Image (tube, rainbow, N blue to C red; front, top):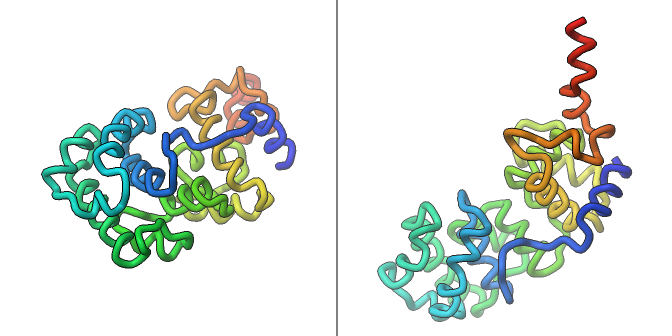
Amino acid sequence: MSIILEILEDLYPNPTTALTHSNSYELLVATILSAQCTDERVNMITPALFAAFPTPHALAQASFEEVAPYIKSAGLWQTKTRNLIRTAQLLVTEHDGEVPRTREELESLPGVGRKTASVVLANAFGIPAIAVDTHVFRVANRLGLAKASNTYQTELQLMEVIPQDKWIDAHHWLILHGRALCKARRPECESCPLQSYCAYAQRNSPDKNQDHDS
């Protein structure tokens, strides 16, 4: 396991979230928007959104009709509009306009599940967490870092095999590797420096398939 983490660290030094933000409020909003939406699309949406509603107080006072036009290209925009406004209202009324720093408080906000809470904890506050998205789930299970059928079990298993001080970086390494090489439909195993350590690559190697056919 350690050699896999060392290689990933060499491949993706100084990793960080791809979501553009300048504070915890902006990261929370961007992460809520990122559900079933690419980070690239979110980053196209948020500059105008944050200019119009730069604080939780501003967003809390906005109407559905005022917010919706900014995020219509995000997918699930109607639900996200309602969630963003209600979340901003709760930030103002229950958290003095600040983004909370505990998982329980974050997950009590509309539109915030375990993955979103983990992203905010890790990237806004530096609190160790592993957010498991589709990339992390796929890459971790292919590499053999986890053997799980769902994201929650994958998260628990990763927390067991990865040192806590590497959780935040490892989350980013797995995402970046999923985007660069370990793609969903056509993973580029032949170009991957992890090939000889990867359970998926070993199962699907041409040599092994030839041995099986012979």
